[in-house]
Image (tube, rainbow, N blue to C red; front, side, top):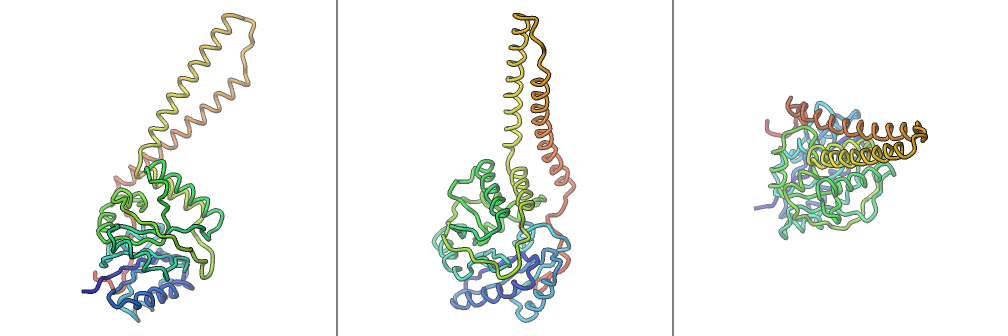
Length: 311
């Protein structure tokens, strides 16, 4: 019986590139007749004509399946939508812009055949904008601190998972999915394969620093309470510091009653401590807001229509 690979492609502003990515996938899989494939492309409410391109490809080849989302929920939500329909033994995530080195597909699949649960492309040098690179580094630092990710674990967008990992991932029903956190909560049996990231086929990435920051916030509020513990620790530190400073001021005043009260130092301390308090309140509010949205059962994604997928 043939092994089946499910390719998942989240699509946004890629009407000029996604068809070439699909062709490369089909050509690569055809090299090994012992493998079958399916391609699940998710239109993440893209403003261009990528949906029409995908539907035309799906009409030509029933192994190409399309999910049309009613609103843009971000790449991770689009991947969650696709994971709910994959049928392959292995699930490979591929970008729609041609940057993923699909020509190295079998290097990515090999670790899964040798006992690993996941394999990830590791790029020595990322061909991204400065803002996206900076956002990726911040996100990686966050996962190390908040989710205790090993330092040598560097995730990318070209990832292969065994199907059981995806089955466990989609059990997460709350809004704001974060695939790195979900993956690490399921397995750490992950292989990292060095390969070179390619340049985009055309256009520029819509994944900017703002979206990276949003993903970073999703990660630490959905999978870690460490920020709240850090807030508690900082509160204790500043309370102790304030008590000691106050004690020193009182002692100095008792020793020398002529010492004038320091307006500047008082204002500086108030502004600094007030800023810390507002930061902690904002963090607490972020958690409470996400709890509220989760209680209201806000969906991760909304599917408008599908093509070549059983209803």
